[in-house]
Image (cartoon, rainbow, N blue to C red; front, side, top):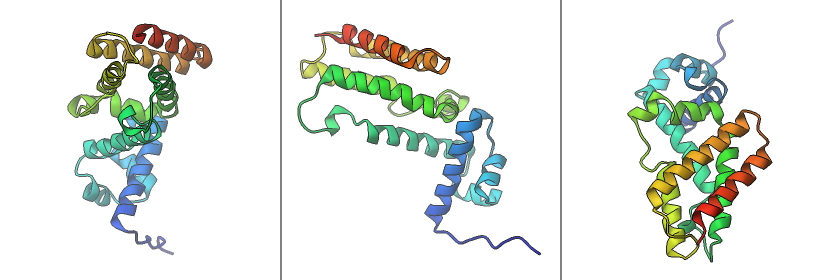
Length: 190
């Protein structure tokens, strides 16, 4: 009795299977995942993997873009929403969302944002730049005070990232988020 016949899928569906397998494994095992693990999980041949992703970094780039797009869709930047913006409230929501998003995808985040891959292929717009853009937009609307957006964004992003690490390490999420939101509001107050 031979192997069951491989079902035929549209190329985009096959590619999606590979990416989803990679995301599952990366979330579980972080940067330790290799091509062999992904092809086994996806049930495809190594040649099929390389048909869609010429290099491992190409796969990681696709996974990272999916994560960024997922976050952007769930938490759009102010330019993408209609009506007046509660700038301090928006910053509170973005910070808490980042913590929760990071914690739910800790392993994959390690692989695509904190590994040598991230150094080889930096994001076009990273978290600091995104935060800086929000600060600038909030300042233009009168919702934030006169801080220098770029260094302030760098420091606030470090605080947000550390808050996620603290919650991951066992600190009380509610207390950490409240302290972080207080810091954000004091720093950006008009």
